[in-house]
Amino acid sequence: MVPPQLPRPPASRLARPSWRDSRLVVGVLLVVLATALGAKAVASARDTVPVYAAAVALKAGDRLTTETLRRVDVQLGAVEGGYLSAAADLPADAYALREVRAGELVPVTAVGGRSEIAVSPITLRAEADSVAALVAGSVVDVWVSRRDPAATQERYLEASLVLRAVPVAWIPPDQGSFGVSAATAAVQLLVPSGEVQKVITAVDESARFTLVPVPGSLRAKAA
Image 1 (cartoon, rainbow, N blue to C red):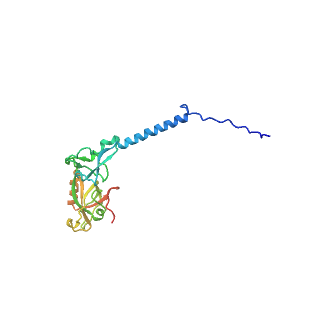
Image 2: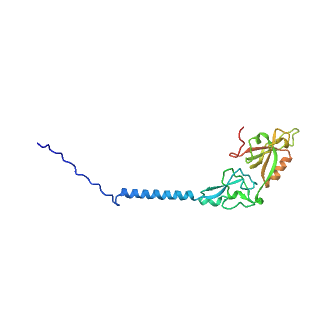
Image 3: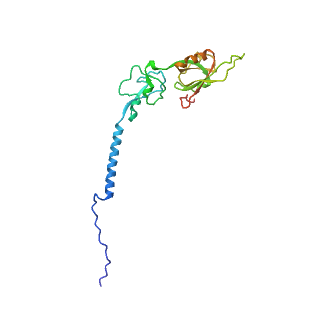
């Protein structure tokens, strides 16, 4: 006796994909989009321009040379014109007009000729403790305590802020040649030209100077 055979489901045929298949259309669009984005990324990576960055910390009055600057190729887009281009030689009369930290791109507004430098180097003595944490390139607020003219002994009036955000140009390594008082230390500041007379007057009056670093400015490394 022949055993009964179970019914078999009809075999399904694989349908050939059609352009009307939404999944196929979406897949093709994704491939095209990925290709386009990849090509754009490669093109953007090559779209760089040469500009100058500070090789060392620059202060107002520093001359710009190939030793103080280095060329970098970067993508700037719409702000390309805001930075010093390295596509041509540096002008012979190029100076820093304000602080630019080492490694930063040099803004066009921070560069000018010698006649545009609006600061003068003034060397004075300030409280040693306030100078100890500073280096060339530090930026400080200058506080002045004037002598009390009514006092018979050395006494100072309440300190007042006379200058804001003044760069430190130089701190002499041999402090002994600038005076014998261990309570004070010599320091050279880049004082705005319009404020020079005020500072010189305070120096002549033997006023006491205290320098307060501006938050975020350069500091001496801890020993």
